[in-house]
Image (cartoon, rainbow, N blue to C red; front, side):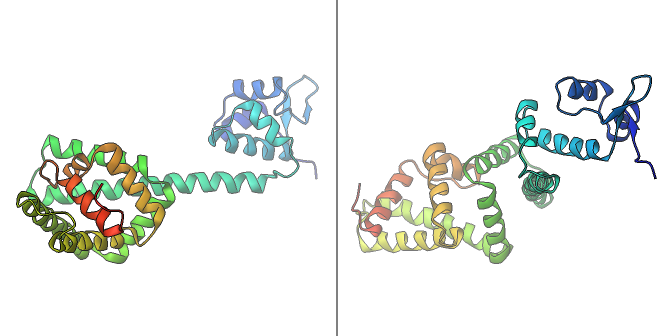
Amino acid sequence: MSEAVLKVGALARRTGLSVRALHHYDQIGLLSPSRRTASGHRLYGIDEVRRLQQIVSLRQLGLSLEDIRECLARPDLPLGRVLDIHIGRVRAEIERQERLCALLEGLRARVEESGEVSLEEITRTIEATMNVEKYYSPEQLDYLRNRREVVGAERMQSVRQEWQELFEAYGEAMARGLDPASEEVQALARKSAALIEEFTGGDDGIRASLAAMYRTEGAENVLQQQGMETKPGLWEYMGLASAVLRGGGPG
């Protein structure tokens, strides 16, 4: 049985690539046909189509044609390995889209609860989305999503209320001029630490990313994006209390 071959036009139609692209790959030596017809038409067999799959996958991963040429010259990069890499990238993109979908569903739920959302609320959601994507790695976002599932929606709402009550208690303590090292304020600091521990699950990387986001974006801005207001200077006051709790002393 003779090997199945495709002319360049047929290969282009079946793969969605342009004839021009296939010609270019041939001209630069990236994908040359195994044979030609008597009249000079390119013919591509199974080996060339397998190589084309590698080229397409590597292009999807963002590699230049020159980088692809170098990759394909490596004997330790068979088609199966290239497909594994491509599959991993596609799955990561699917997970990113799922995270975005979850955020949009949350906004949709708020619309259903209140009947409408303001322009400010929508822009805050967008900004919060971008901040989360900026400061947490895909693996960390997956971890946090799993944490939310473990904790449950009811507990998440309860935690939000607990934070609001803590902010109010901290605000009252600050207004009264209480020392951050006082037992009353330290009791609030312990509650704060416990909530942070519950959110991060004790993961040091998550804690560091959380701290970086608050430090860079400004705690008041981040909290405002989440619909929580704090008094001016409150975050610094809470930071002093937290430093005392950790044993570092105020400041």
